[in-house]
Length: 219
Ligand SMILES: Nc1ncnc2c1ncn2[C@@H]1O[C@H](COP(=O)(O)OP(=O)(O)OP(=O)(O)O)[C@@H](O)[C@H]1O
Ligand SMILES: [Mg+2]
Image 1: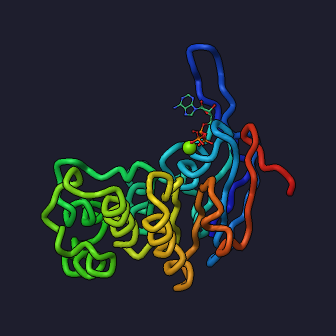
Image 2: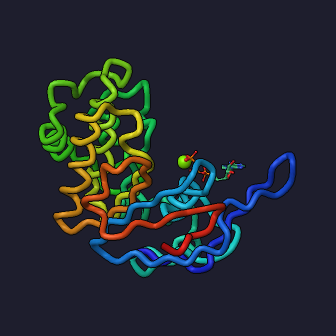
């Protein structure tokens, strides 16, 4: 499903080049549930963004579902991403001026697929948010915001979900519920890569990898 071939990422900074990923090789199989751990600054977010087609590595290839995603044009990659990959972030990343339902429908724009409000409503119902569909993110609790973000990630029926500390801003009950949706997605055959500090995902993890200074540690 995912193959990273000798990925490095160097950020140019005011104080010189910063190597955030250092020659990463990683294969993630279809249907795998992979947990990524590592200290702050070890490169976890950089890794997820690179896998998701949102951050071009300085070196190496990212192959998703047989496609070399950074060999595509920007427009092609944006469409591929919208159709194949769902993202869930710690800070939810909802668009503040859009209602819940429009946030969920966001990845259907830009020539991807036709907007399907009915499917979005079904998802909102499943995630206990249907009565909030016209509300703005600022009117939601943290748990509700994350459920809206998860609904958005699920809308296009992606094969792969990338989640960057999806439960980091949630209390234990909301964290368990949010993780539960990722587990459901995985049970239905989806591939999950999740960055998380806690142990909440461990019971479901097929594999746990550790990053340190941009490298995968042997465990
Ligand atoms: N846009 C950027 N420009 C320059 N340096 C960056 C940029 N983004 C991240 N870095 C640096 O790259 C390294 C890896 O950052 P990254 O965000 O991937 O770490 P992380 O493991 O996700 O950390 P955290 O657990 O704190 O979220 C860090 O040293 C960070 O300072
Ligand atoms: Mg991070």
